[in-house]
Image 1 (cartoon, chains in turn orange, blue):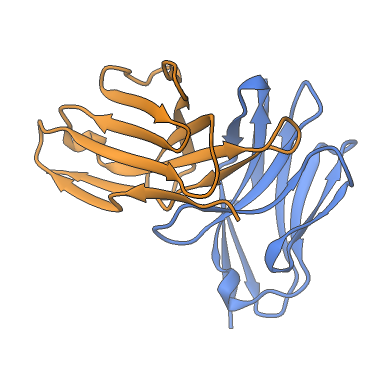
Image 2: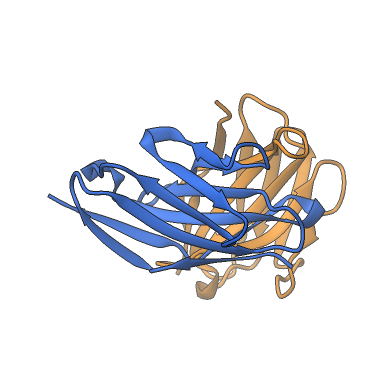
Amino acid sequence: GAVVSQHPSWVICKSGTSVKIECRSLDFQATTMFWYRQFPKQSLMLMATSNEGSKATYEQGVEKDKFLINHASLTLSTLTVTSAHPEDSSFYICSARTGTDGGETQYFGPGTRLLVL
Amino acid sequence: AQSVTQLGSHVSVSEGALVLLRCNYSSSVPPYLFWYVQYPNQGLQLLLKYTSAATLVKGINGFEAEFKKSETSFHLTKPSAHMSDAAEYFCAVRGGNTGKLIFGQGTTLQVKP
């Protein structure tokens, strides 16, 4: 099956620093990847859609200068949380889309837990 | 615009009992619907999906869901619950041409011995 990895799985950082999270599709190419944020006991909130070779599309209310997304290749997308603050602490999950229209499916990474002190 | 509503944020069943998790959707176009499961501190795993083929969809781990257009529902069922089924379950609908998923609020399934 399609496998998506994320690195790191856990990160603790000081307020004001930047953190980069990688999302990789291991056994398929993904022209589109998605980044979600999940707070405890809540559903997933889509942050942005990442397309290979083009700028990410951000959801309303998500600061694009705060959450930098780069989709450098068909198997790698990165999310950088710039100048992180405690309110950015959350569980970040990526997904990669495979298949054609009608049969497409999103496969999710295991998530990255970010704690900003 | 598409949306999903999961009825019941918490469902508790006994081991061996029927599992029924409810999902209703709203969509202006024929929907693509999904059920995902999330175990603690993990990502989401696809259980099954409906993409306008058969209305009764069978997934992994003995789960299945039936698409009912007249009721705008896509409820998830399993005949006999196992302890290992305890997790968070999310129903989702694909939104528009971008392929992004719109998730329901999630339902926590508790399985009692």
